[in-house]
Length: 423
Image 1 (cartoon, rainbow, N blue to C red):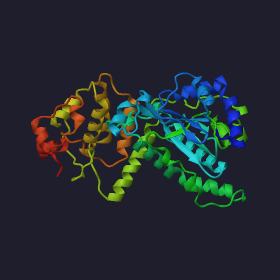
Image 2: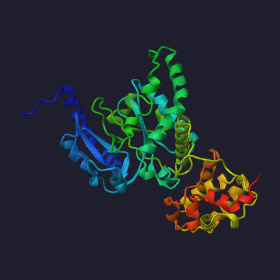
Image 3: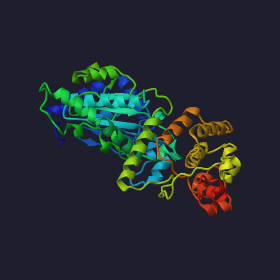
Image 4: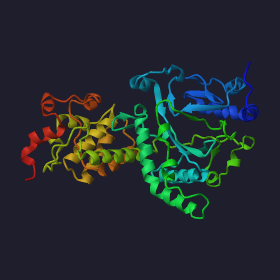
């Protein structure tokens, strides 16, 4: 004999049938599910994984079978149904298209979560991320999304799609660190009228949830209901976030809006590079070991040459400077580190980079180049990659045997130009 649901569960199930029968709710869930692994929840337990939706009415069909809420992945897949439990990193990378940066904020008090969300949005805007999605979690928190479109597709020749969850964790840690002081101040101000008992641990509890940033972790989809509160995970504008009250998430009051913002391509590049730079600086400070571009310890300081004619550059660098058809971003990475390590003047350095880009077919976006230059100039110079790395062969540049023997363009430069070194 089937167990009779308790009164709370019976109430939730009545609401789910009425709420999910709405075509606009089904459409919102279906549209957001595209390219994602989805999983329905049946009040207390989750359904099978992986799963996906083929049509909007799949939502209500699952509800009729007992589904009460819907959850999905941050990761975007070529075919979610090809995911298998136990896949290694390489196998997952092969079928992953990309991923959204999803920041989960949760606290014992909704007002604390609201303050945290506002501070994070302010920080994102500061780093040029002007388009973010915000939604209520359904309980006492909020979700902030920076879509895949806004993320840099690669940094220093490394594909962002293959750096999940590592880079997502680093960016969330950077955000956590950056807003912590102001968040504590804001919560302290809120606590002074004795609205809540002062809680010195709340800054830890309210911060973005790093547990969420893990492979195949699911989060509640926009406009899904929450089993414990019977509230909808509604999408909010920044103004609506500021004035949000729990009653605004009543299923009967829901008005559908798009959770995914219309971001500019790569607008989060500055944020990611700043976060990765911050993380590397922390690691370097901890280890007290400075590293070059390929991760090996730096053995000597940048060197100033009297003559910087291209004729004196290593053959591989000269070939790159003729223009690149494929692998231009990797080539840019090599040139930036080469020019900086030979102490080329900033104006000359930037002039040569932009002149080189005009020879590329097609040229790189100048905004991308400027971002890479700005990021590089904020850090100490590092060696360009060694010749035995895939950077060179990957862009069709084969180092000479003499270069290979020198190991690095800087070593080659020193051997060939030692008479021109400044004494």
